[in-house]
View 1 (cartoon, rainbow, N blue to C red):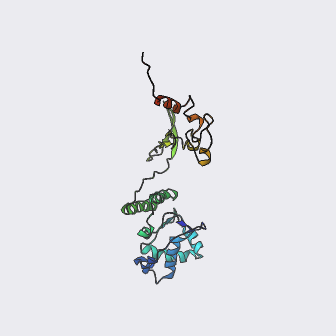
View 2: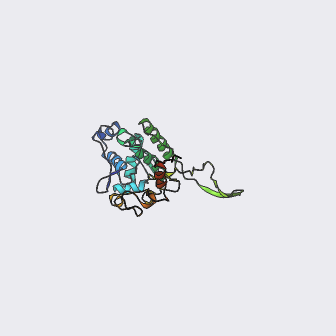
View 3: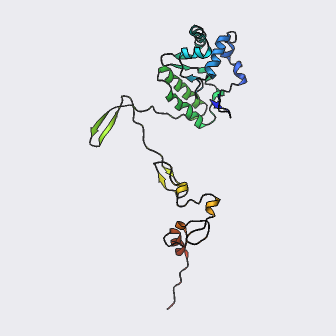
Length: 250
């Protein structure tokens, strides 16, 4: 789902939409065609094209239809393989929306689609749709990352290392390792989050900061803690080491 400058979400529908064989088959039934439009681009849409959480009563109300009218039109879509639903979850899937027009633009978009499945109710239909989307994206040349489900903790066990959680059957503990973040100024790393940059002692910053005078030597372009004339800095020691030394003759 995209957003215009106004911030209102919208779905882009290509002009070739009506050339699709399944859509042409519905052209004689305006109710079924309109229902497909609504299911495809209605306010219940998610970032996964054609997969969303909604019950039949809510969908019928959104169309201002009776449950009976909605069910009749949905049954036609289901008979043609254009729509599937688990009303107990509830979850609706439109398999036909896995098409080249809905290919992600980049890897972040691909990752976002697969991760959005975690927000949908658990059911067999969800797993089938997730697997189908993963296969479709892989065939389109995108990398599909496996996103683990949240770990469910049922009880704790006390051992030599203290209390630790026990995982529910069939669940694997997620890795808690984090990639280190590096300061682009000094190269220091930390796994606790972003560090330094503007707070780094080596950070010069914008033109206004770089034009400030050093408190040690009065020159511009560096600070006191990196001044080559400050005996407490590495810059001073390097400057002294680079000076030529003369040995007197006896």
